[in-house]
Image (cartoon, rainbow, N blue to C red; front, top):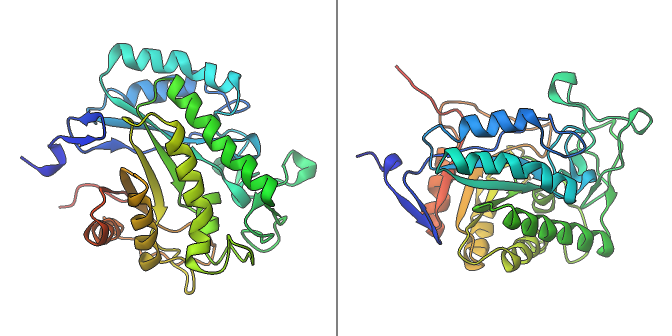
Length: 306
């Protein structure tokens, strides 16, 4: 039997196979709240035969959304909107349900992809974004505000509050989004992080805030429920975040109890040059697994070849 279809256990979660339906942003929420679209999307994929389904990037603050249509879990309304959806999944499927907790940082306040995906000006309903440094994602955009000590605590507390809400909803596992140029990845990458305090500069300093967030979430999520982290293994930009640094990050996460590393890449800079090919990110997962022994996931351009 293929290893793909063999069982695996992550803490107290026993999975019949090693296939997870990846989190897919739908950009269709209303003030962060799930609706009929999400009911159909989630319940359909819950019947796929995969052992785990991961709910799309679910933002811990309204200002942490990528777009106005992004899903959130920051108040009672957003929590309540997910209850009937998850109740239906539990009624009809035995699939494990994970949730990806996210904060877009400087990549927030953007139009949905079908509306161009560019930053929304403040005058047109956009919002002031935040990040590790006051550096815009690309030239011409409104720069984010650099998070100060109070802001860092607020965002960390928002991740904690969302994790508690996820547990109340019966979510089986969490994945922290530390990839694709969003806030936690921004702290990791020297392209986005040019701080001169304890959160910037050296690799250990750049790891500090994402690790603090992980520790805080792990402390409040039940011990028998697993938590993984999605990473961009490389920025695909010279002088940026790379595989060697990712491996060091994975080592630190494993020591803190991370149950998997989900290896993706890119997203922090429009200057990236990605050599796309089938399964092009699998070697990242293999290298992380070999160097650290942590359970890994591989994503991107999987399919049939003749």
